[in-house]
Structures are given as structure tokens and as C-alpha cells.
Length: 394
Ligand code: ADP
Image (cartoon, rainbow, N blue to C red; front, side):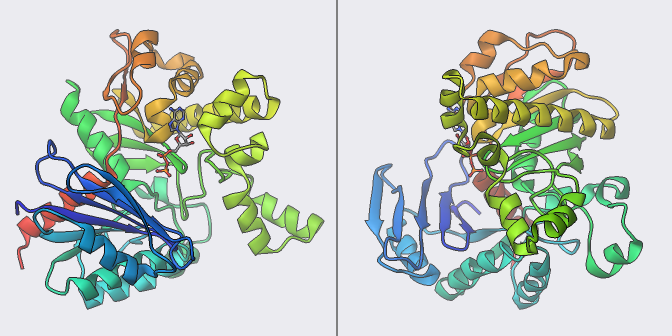
């Protein structure tokens, strides 16, 4: 299958797309339709000639926006569509060709991801209506972590909550962790070893990978567990919910909004969820920004240290995501907070490896390696779509 794969990532009011050619050296057409349903809906992107464009969509819904996206695509038409689906539950352990039964199963799994799966499905339905003859594949954020052993995925809760309601840790950012760990296995001489990956974007998660398989990860039943994120709290005492309910009379919806939208870097700093803004403010000694960055880095180090227990051997740590790829000061602070791991950061390589560069940032001693690898979730989704269709042609 040599033609490009169209990758679709559909949110509740947005569609992100990329037309991914098989040859990674070729440019990609890509874009984002946002604020769908609103009067200020807009499509921005890069066309087949590499030119940026922006056009109003005037209240367009997902199906209308998808039709405009398809009209805009130039060059060879896609051979298949790969959809990012957030939650695959325990049923989906890898990329899966979409048919009516799979659609129903994704709908059922929606109970575990009520904010994400229904929005993803809107994109699937709109694309199926426009491209009835094209093979369409679902690639799940959770699938890469289906290799976790029970000791990593079970919560210490009564068994029936797991058996009857699927309450367990699933993990997310699977396409990113799969891509980055695959890439480091390819680049490093310690191929197929033990890696800790820190994906630090607006959402943040860590993952321990042993011989290409995820063995533990920081996100859980939902993407709220684990690290401090842009607006998400990450781990808090589970007793907090009852405390806020009893003491402040807060509803579950109120607490959910607090933990998902008002916490994390934004809550701690009181000014922003954006690391660039916080680094500027911290340079001017804003106490909230300084504290937010300190807690953020400490919690990453703590999570990496905890996940290292799942690896027989630690070959290295990889940073990715908007913060992991660019914020060299954050990387340095995380490494500094792990003094007993024998890590040796090269200050020069660390400072120079920013802005989408891939490379090693350790000082080359015998200890674990340190890497920065820009993530490519769209590329991974296209790769898995291609691989599935070549193994099981229609
Ligand atoms: P998403 O999870 O939405 O895909 P990204 O992976 O793009 O997000 O990461 C967004 C985060 O990356 C923001 O906090 C942003 O401030 C941070 N970031 C991007 N560039 C830089 C930079 N040069 N220095 C520090 N942080 C950066």
C-alpha cells in the first residue's frame, strides 16, 4: 500500500488531520478544524504545496468540516483512514479494522471515556459516509498498554469492580509511547532494552517499556492519574473527593471540573497552563510559576523512579511532547532530582536538542542513556493502519 494514509483525530469540537505518505522523507498535508459548531469555526493547515492556509467554516459541524478537509487534500488520494480512538478497554489490544461490530464495541467502551470516545466516533461516522469504499482502522490510545501485568493494572479495590465494571488502570498516549520507544530501540545500541519514556505535553504521562512492550504507565482508568499536567492535577489523595464533598458541599461534577480543568500547572501557578509562559514568569521570580515548575519536575522524577521498579534493567530515559522536546531546563531539573540513578546529562547537548531535534543528551558515560525524541502520533497511527491492512487485506 504505497498511497498515503489519512489520519483523523476527532475531538468534541475539533478535527485534527494529517495525510501521511509511506515515505517519511515526503512532506505531509495536515491541519486542524476547530471551534466546530460555533460561528468562529475555522480550518487551518498546510496544503500539498507546503503553503499555510486558514479558512472560516461558519458554524460547520464535523461532517461539513470533514467534507471541506477532503476537498482541500491534493496529490494522490488516501488508500485508507486511520482514526485515533482514545479508549479501547480490554477488548482492543491493537489496531482494528472498523466494521459495524467494532463501531458498536467502541460505543460500549465509551462508558469508560465519556468525554472522548463519542467525539472520536463522530469523526469515524463522518469519514465512513464520505469514503464508504476506503478501509478505515481504529488505533487506540490504550492498546499499547494492554501488555501491562495485573500487578501494574489492578487497583487495590474489591474484585467485582474490575470483573463487572472494568475498573482498572488502562494508560493512554499509547501511540506516542509506542513510537518513541520503537524509535529509541532503533537508534540506540541498547536495542530492546528497558526504557522510561516521559511524554510531556498538555497531557503528561510516563511509561516503562521492556523489550518493546509497555510494562507500566502513569495514567490509569482515565487520563487524570499520574503526573501534574497543564490543567489536570494528576495524583491526589483519593480521600480529597469525600473531603470536598463533605466540607465544601461540592458535587462530583464540580470536583471533576476542578481536577481536569482548573488544576495542574494552571492551578499551582495561578497564571497559565503553558510552560513557555511559566518559564518566562519564573525568570521574573513569579512565586506561583516557580512552584508550579518545581512540583511538575519533582513529580516527573518521582514517577520515573517508581516505574523503574517494573524494569529488569534501566537502559535510558526518553523525553518527548511539547515540553519534553523543548524545555531543556525542565529536563535538567528532572535528571537532577534522580541523583541515585547514575545519570549524566550533557549541558551542551541538552541545551542544543530543542525545536524538534532528535538526539542523545547524556555525557556518554556508562550509566543509562538520555534521549530527546520528538513524538509522531500521526506517523504511528498511519504505520499501524498500513501494517494491519497489509497483514489482512480486504
Ligand atoms: P498537546 O499535548 O496538546 O499535543 P504539546 O505536546 O504541543 O501539547 O505540548 C504543549 C506544551 O509544550 C505547552 O505547555 C507548551 O508551553 C510547551 N512548549 C512548547 N514549546 C516550548 C518551548 N520552546 N519551551 C517550553 N515549553 C514549550
